[in-house]
Image (cartoon, rainbow, N blue to C red; front, side, top):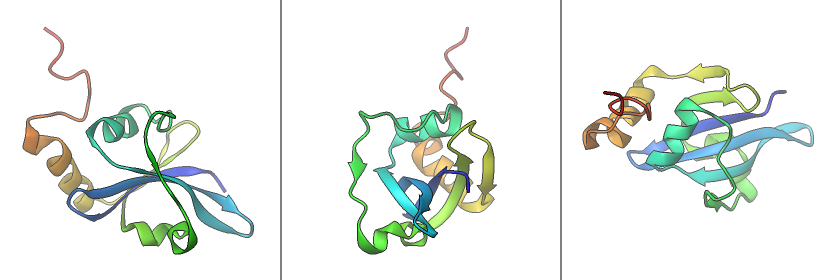
Amino acid sequence: MTERIEWRTRDKGDDALILVGQSGDSEAVLKAWRADTPLLTDFLNDLEGPDSSAASIDVEGDRRNPQQWGTLVMSRARDGGDVLAIDPEPYWDGIYYWFRAHGLDPHRWRGTRS
């Protein structure tokens, strides 16, 4: 199984990025980060993985199940960044909430070129 990073949402603004990988005989959340605009920008553009300066969330008990983190928005392979899954409706809702509503673009270079 390929380790992947998933963007999951429970409600507007209650989003997280989770690292899902093999734990024993099943898939489990290995690490999690509370989503914010810079973290999602990196996820959408680079996917080198959240850096060590990003504040992680404790993952224990039932929070090891990816489904407990909400609806899957998008999933990318940890190595290489290939898009593995995307649900268009929550994706565009998230893009609006985190970026467009604030006049931002999720692509960091847009608007910076003359």
